Image (tube, rainbow, N blue to C red; front, side):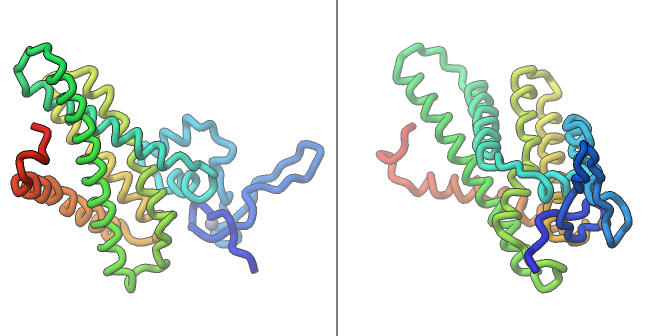
Length: 239
Ligand SMILES: [Zn+2]
């Protein structure tokens, strides 16, 4: 039998349809055989309500978005989030430099700083993902379902949408900005944990542990970069 294309958002059982069309404009939402609840109540909901439930990290909303929709913007979202992160780091770097020299070479160097920050953000994301995937690969024997790499990557990238909040946090800069950045980070990690839980149908503890391991890997990346930079010859560096 062909693999079911949908999932019940309540019990994670597979489903072959979300609704049935009885013609003459009569549509009936499908009821799950396992839990006797609607397979996906969100197909009737306004996207704003789905977004609010996703922000509240409701597992049903995550299942709806990941399994029952054809959203395919995760790579574009990833690039945009990296740009947001690069802009944040770049603006903090500019804020720490007191030079007011208008020479072109300075602007040129600052532009390269932005590319450098983008590369660093991409590297940290790659290391974070690598850490999460390595941990899940190690504990694969304890998982109810084997991790599907494309689905897992898609879920992790989509659930990192919270990084978009960095832009307003940078634009409306105030004394509590560092606290805002920490809260945004916490929100992204919580969403990532929920996405892992949805994909693997595992316990909350395991998904939190996977995110924690990824975070540990990510924290080590800048230290490794600094050591690499210090070991590079001067003529290879821009500054
Ligand atoms: Zn169900």
